[in-house]
Length: 439
Image (cartoon, rainbow, N blue to C red; front, side, top):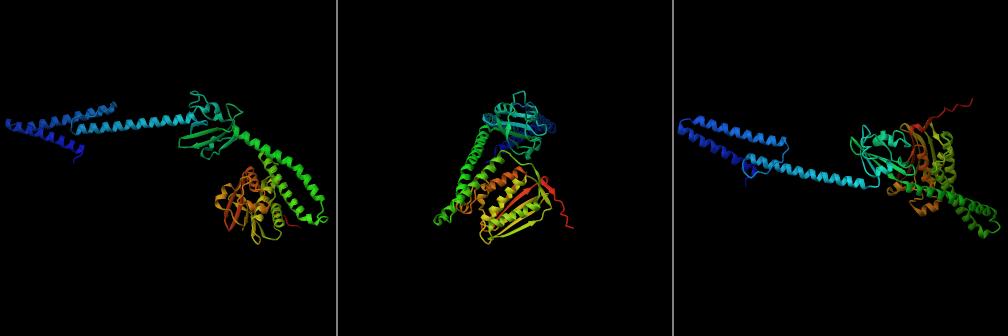
């Protein structure tokens, strides 16, 4: 069965043939055959050019094409143009409806949404929440630069960082300094950025309450623990041999609780950014100290290795970095079976340096790695109790490294062991002075 287009071609060609045939018969009857045929062909050509002119004029004026009722190739072209026009109009309506829906959804969000032009950093669009959180007014701030509105940010040139900009937490709102914001910059195209500002005032208040609670409880526990330790030290197991195991267990558990309190206080100080002044941390003396602590905790049950392959020292707090490194070393000793091997390596890493603590212990299953540095998170509760850990060592290490511009990398395989790497950038490294030989 022929298609409508094929039928239109047949109809048009049939009409042309019929016209030429009639003209030929009339020309033959009057003796002017070629003249009649030429005039008929010229008329057909003029008619076709006239129809083409009408279509072009209609397209130029963007008039809607009406679906024709007659046949022929030009009517078929009108029909196809009319169908394309209807489809384009329907698609345009759908796109407009989707745009309205997206804008309505963005306007209803409690977060401030601002579309920013990448090159000029000017505001293209923002929702209603941006007025209360960022102090933007419509239409005054449309096409205005976003920089002056964010001039108070704690990180200079944050907008210029583009796709590398990190999320900012606990920033004061330009509209109301009592409102705390988290800001995130999302480059969703080559020309536009999406600035998302969220009100985290309640979250920050709850976080502060949590820190205050932990700090206060930890301080309050120190006094009764000190009293308990004092009385336990006064008791002599030799006077009551039957009580010796009980007293030993009480001393062990009170010591564990005291360590937990100390770790909580350390985290509270780190949360409050109560840091010691930075100084050159001598790794030449730090590494033997870490090895001595590992050997004291191991009691000869492990093989302890130390390698100092870096020629740099670190810039930071000696006390805090020692706490972070010591936690990694003590964890390696606690979670490595007797006869295992523990290696402490300080070596170059790109333009910076890395301190790595590797063990041949139990290993950490992959599903636990994303949460292993959370406070009180334990892979195995029973094994942690047996080893005497508090569940805060890795959290302290991660927090200390973050305050020093470094980060903690963990590589572990069950049954093979784990490697904890403290990666320091070049800015935190200082060339180590050459040790002079004794004369």
